[in-house]
Length: 251
Image 1 (cartoon, rainbow, N blue to C red):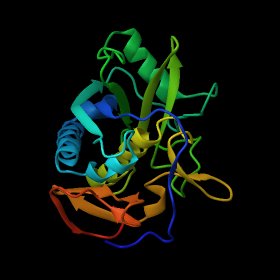
Image 2 (image 1 turned 30 degrees about the vertical axis):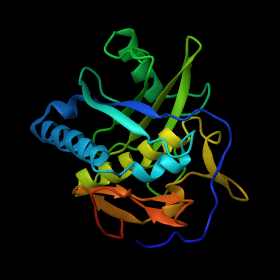
Image 3 (image 1 turned 90 degrees about the vertical axis):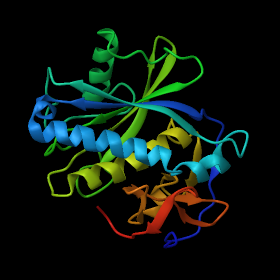
Image 4 (image 1 turned 180 degrees about the vertical axis):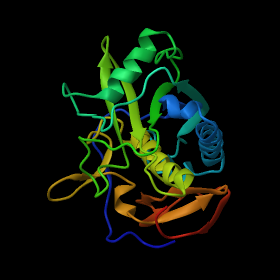
């Protein structure tokens, strides 16, 4: 496995961690009801299941509390909302700023499509998968106006955790989605309220565990994923169970 660009040390900052997760993949927009869209829904959902069943998260156990307890994705569910289309560009600002993504999730909760607190023993994590060609007006983390992000919001005094993934406009769209989805999944469970979980502090920003492995991807159970930094290994890893030989490079 290719090493991270530089050695970091991740520290826990006392915030919540998502040890047991129900992952909901929300496919928002009428595009997902087309032939191409339906095929991609099937491909992404199956890839997410292979990812979490293939040992990808196993080396994150060092970051759980208590250390060594595995992070567990108990279910992966596909949710289609083709009754409206996300704006292009869409927004997802932190706090009280505009967020089309939060509004979509709140709408699904209001309509009883989603119930974030249906299981007291696990946390719902909502990942909105955007149709091809959309950009985010509020992202600032790369030259393509953001491949994905994760945040949270308060709903009646309880946290709701979510994120979003852009499909982009290039070929190899499935691999673009799986690499970004894997990154947002890993960082959402280890740092669900950004900056309060496991982060390494740089001069100007907090670095999450996948940020330290920029550009280092690998296949797990046949799925292209983003690697994450391991304090124990001082390297970028993809889990110890059923991991295939590494492939370095972007999707």
